[in-house]
Length: 188
Image 1 (cartoon, rainbow, N blue to C red):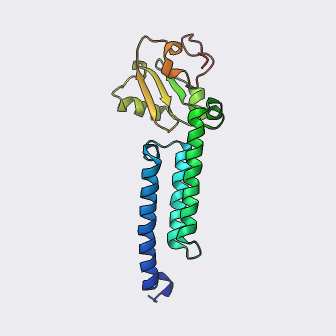
Image 2: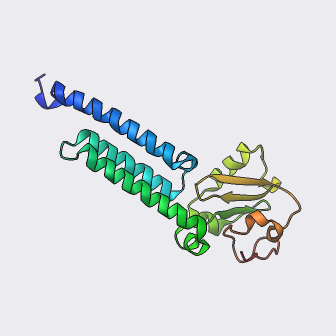
């Protein structure tokens, strides 16, 4: 087996990578701490995009010689500020929220699988059944609703007598115009 000099880096470059790794680690930890709990909670699409982008920028700043620590840090901070502005606006404007943020989607109603919603969200019956089992429900008829939340998690509401149009927490959930059993969609 021949020695490949491209496999190994110079010691000075390895030390540089180690120092930059520590610097970016501290930078990301500090920025995460400053941005609050939302950053590390269940991620929605925007949070996921920021996470992937920050990881890519940090890796670029660590490994690419032509990307300085300052350049990568400024880019990470700029993305963090964009995320802050977007969440600031989303919290204050329902119009903007409706335009750019996905709504939760009803996938199961009173034990009936909503096939159109499942196709639209690319969720299988097996995934919904798994969510039911994780809540201790083994028969779909025992569930009032299963909702795909905006962060990709499932919310399971056990069977009860409440109508969907009377359940305030269901107002912003995407539902079909008519539901099985004759229940009409509540406008919200």
